[in-house]
Image 1 (cartoon, rainbow, N blue to C red):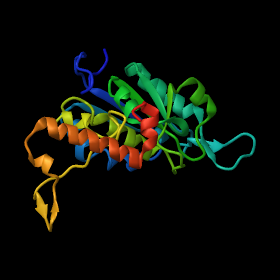
Image 2: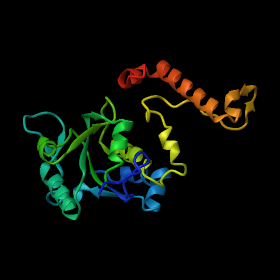
Image 3: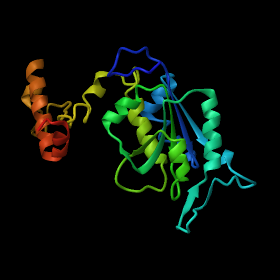
Length: 244
């Protein structure tokens, strides 16, 4: 059974399980132990388990990396420890996706976060060093995701970003679930400006329409501002969605 999210109420809500494989588990402990993700874990809306790949390494020093064939510089994560850990996890439950964080994966987007949030069990393999043995990508991974056109020291930060973006979409995680529907990129455009009290600060005033109490006028203003901001700051979004 698939998980439900705020964008699809046709499914019964169940707990999402995210298993993250890494050589640096401590790097993930802090970003996944605070704020919205922490709330989701405490409310048992998401189960996030971090696995230390070195526990499956070879020999006295728990080796998980080696030099690449061909003489290229940099160390590569070996296939054996990754395979052992993934197979062990797969014995416990089926996985909808086994994701590898990679600079040459598909670009991560709000649409992709929405899609993943509908899944029940996912696994994220954090790349490290020069990458992973290509056979891992060919035979074990089901999806490769990139968070941008740049290279990080490892995939841990990318895994944290993917997890945060997905978990906040799960039912019950946000206090006001409709807030996720109005985030930037949900409708292919940037979100409109937002204001709070005081209505007048040093002569800098909140637009009068937001104080009018007229929902129709406020919604029209928000749509207009959303479109104008997107045209100015991210016109590529309009081209990609056909809203231009």
